[in-house]
Length: 232
Figure 1 (tube, rainbow, N blue to C red):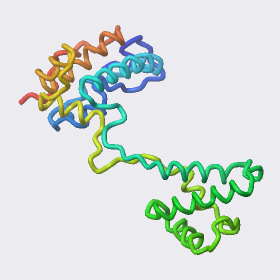
Figure 2 (figure 1 turned 90 degrees about the horizontal axis):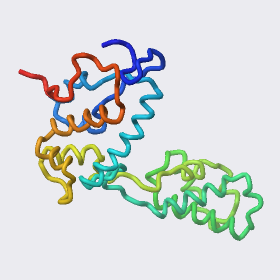
Figure 3 (figure 1 turned 90 degrees about the vertical axis):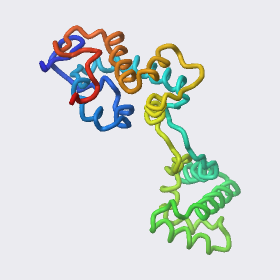
Figure 4 (figure 1 turned 120 degrees about the vertical axis):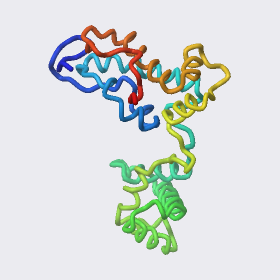
């Protein structure tokens, strides 16, 4: 393969582009994953960025057809952590000295209550701080916040996390194609993809790349219908 962008032909600032995105290919069987060099092509950064805008739209289309949100399925929301995160951020703010004393006391109480409920999410150092703060009779005593470890960790804590049943967008799409199960409202293209199985998904992405990237310098051996599995 020549060392130039397959779209515009320049030889500088190249990146390797996966025609079939890794977020799908990683969930395919090994015979397909190990035979992926055909769909690894050099693109310059500008052409890659232009095509990726189209690729994102196609992923959104697949997410609707296969009920596979791009952010995945199986998130656990933690609204109390969000409340504690906002309180901690306020106490770390450079404007904390402008917050009324009564409001400061409320924020500190919120931080300690949330931290005490989610001790397992903190580092050992922060857990020690939480224990000391919880032992104080009055949570509005500013001295309990002489260490900022609790605030620093809580202020960046995730407000939603993956559950044990979490599934990525690519996993859901590939499973639907393999099992032949998709939304009842599949478009004609996705319906054909399901009928053809994994080769259909691979072919669909190849066609999408050719249509939207409009490459002018493709390798001679490259073909849309090239087998996606190693031939025996």
